[in-house]
Image 1 (cartoon, helix red, strand yellow):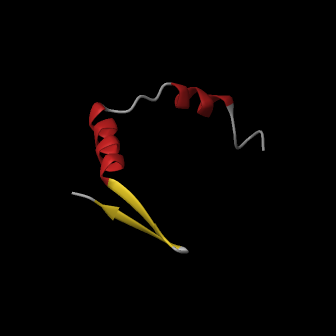
Image 2 (cartoon, rainbow, N blue to C red):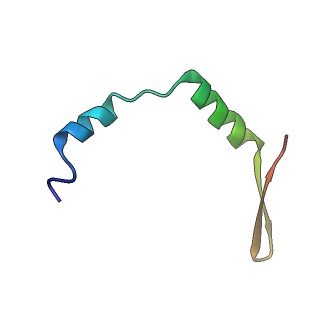
Amino acid sequence: MEKTYSKTSSDKVSNLSPKEETVRFLLDYSKALSVIDCNKWKFEALLN
């Protein structure tokens, strides 16, 4: 397990920063997504 999860890989993760376009896309998608509960069913709809 130690060999799989080395310290070098955790260093790379801490330096990640998303692009502004990616953040904007995810926020817009989450605003447009609607989940509708109907009895035991769940429907996902994109409201564009």
